[in-house]
Image (cartoon, rainbow, N blue to C red; front, side):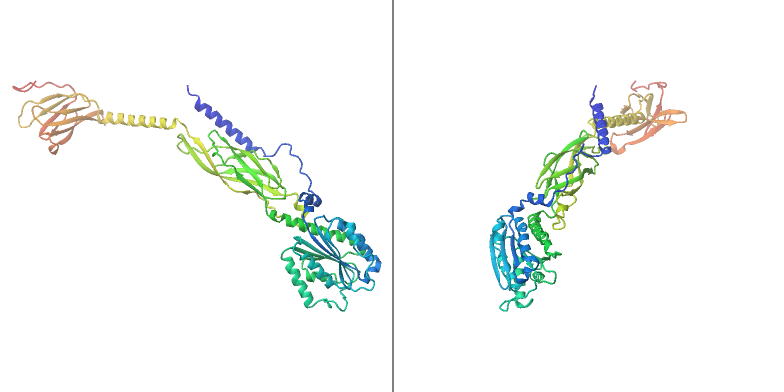
Length: 520
């Protein structure tokens, strides 16, 4: 007894039940761990190893006579220390003081804050003027040097308006000399990220805003009082660090998660299930990514898909490969004969891609991480052995039975068994009729009395009196096809074919008396 077909049916039912249960249940990881809180900027900067990325700082400190008021200069000296402490040894510091003239106090690496602060004069120049133009000239020369860092900041601290000495190249707050400064700043900004931070220290109008006329990317930080200077200097430092981070993260802007099928054999759904490996990869170099609501579907044909976690965390450049479980069947079509069916389904992958760095870095850095996963190949080739191995033999056997039945019916109607007697006679007083006993289903006629040759077979007909068998007679007097003709003769009737009389007696009938010389 063949148990293959019932076993296959049981496997198919089990697979369908499994697929239905998987479709009904939500695809979520069991006891998923709660998401970690977003990191701070400091943690992000440490992850980026930002301390190894250099930046240039040109710090311009006003030492004119007005800086003695309200202890402004002493406050600047004190608040510069935490600002400088926030720099790294990879940073480059150029500290200038300016009054009637500009003087470089320290030019070198950051890291030794005490040494840099000690380079400042103990007090401002009592009768010193305020030459902001010359100070900006010195700062641009510093950040334009050949070995300058790719990120540069000019920090201007002043409490007065631009009022230079008589010999200054910048006698006014505008003019050709200032235009030349602006042109130089534009050239520097073309090869480095140049930004300015102007901090006015006085309560009234100052010339701090002149920095924005030279360096377009300038932020004017306006503390309410000299006591707020430390917070505003820290803000300038934070923005410079953000610019350093933005430069590192620039290649990651707009990068997200890609999904790729692993090369291998085409999934075989012969028993209602198959597996296929899918690799999810982070395209970022620095930014960690998280995918939530991860769910896969396959359409055309529709299959249920399992094997993916609901939430996925990817470190920069990390790849994770999952074995997807596909459940479903390929259609065998209207004729379920055994064959290998190939199909191409469409793969859909849903999920929201985010990064825990997005909120801490905004608004200074917008990562613009694509929210959707980019599937590199949405087509999914499938194969399955479908149909029954016995279908074609059964179909052939059925057709053979139909043909045989049709032939038997045709034979019964067109070739019924012959019975009775056929009498042959020639007209015009010829010899006695020749008697031929009918038998079989088709007989050849070769009468000795009339010569010639022919054939006779029966055809069954339905009549009011019941079924009867007529004879279909074909005869040629000389045996050639050219003179052959035919006729149908009912039981008890007589027909003449090619000059020969044929009488059909469907019973034995009386035997005619033989004439002399007639063969018995």
